[in-house]
Length: 577
Image 1 (cartoon, rainbow, N blue to C red):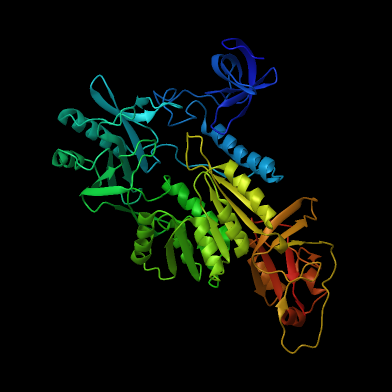
Image 2: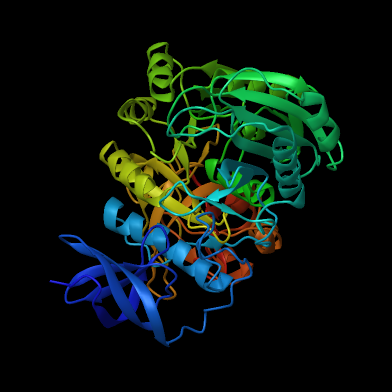
């Protein structure tokens, strides 16, 4: 049993989901903030539980090469960031490892690694700030909560926010102090200003300011507007009414005091209108990379109906609409749905429909109405999917399910539940949308288990099936003579090194000859199927098939996702059924 206030020497062996270091002392897991894996530290025990303890570094005996000096002067106090004490290489590694470990432990996967997409810039990337306001010695100030408390830590310049956000905060606080605008007290539920909310369009540069208040009236508004007009890009001022006790920042009523009450920004080539309650990813550049990966993983065609169960203002829904026949977005927040419909109209998109309802309940209702979903996309809140949503997805039985997640634990939990419904994990990617913070975003692709084909790769000529049909139907088969089609998952063993692999058939490229296929090989990744031939040169294939037979039967290259090269040159000859 560990003793409180006792100092122990231990090695940091891992990280928690919040980024704290983990040490094992006398068989007990000890959570240590500001620690880095591999460091040997003297740790003072500050709290002891039944199966865990909390500690604090007294002295670092052996530093990690990843430890750096903090660029933020209040990093140790402020709860906004978690990793200012380590370099970005280690931060990216631990985030990737967190996603991989969750999927392996909770979803029963066996992933050696997950592709990680670090952010190209770790500063000024957030497009939204929500500053709690406090008072000290009769003076209002704003900042961010200290970790685990409601103590507001003041900071003149937050490094992960654009300068405009901190400029707005300073102007509002000066205005409050000059005109004696009261600060909300969460204990007595008296006072007016609760939060200063700032949103800036990364492309447009437009700035929305929302003052969250414990009331519907605000004095000296004109004086505030004149100050805010000095902020580059200032577009609109909104009063957000929240008179309810509790931790929720925004209420349900918004009063526009200046401008239109919204701003616009561009994402994935589309223009979006953003109001205070609109869900919009906070890292613009990384969001574009994540959405593009999700769209690629979805493998959408013009014949597909795509269902987006947590669509927000329609960002990923509308981005997918350009590849799909029809897209349906579902969102529970009325204002977001209104914005999504406006965004579709603004971008000239006519194949998008948006419904205001709970994701699970709406999906079940659509399923009862006979709506067929070829591809389902989900980007749920941190708590993940509810039981209704999972049941509806199972009933839809989409060819592909793309799950965008901000919490690896709930993602892994849901993947395990979806596997019970007949889905199989095809691939997983991690994206860092929150540099210097503990959160990590990920996107996984799941397909129906019954579309997984096991492939034999024995080098032998293709069987020519001649049935006397006048119309030649080109088909591709696996070992059980089941047709392989785009969107299927294939499981196979690489003949060159014995590696077991899985990939999705992204596209079947058809040619009249092996020569045409080989000209295209540098542009795509090709694979085997069924009765394959391992060959390095077109001449090797031509000893089995004449030019006339190649043209008659057709030659196909299989493009895989993720891209995998099974052999140096791998081709497929279609058979006539």
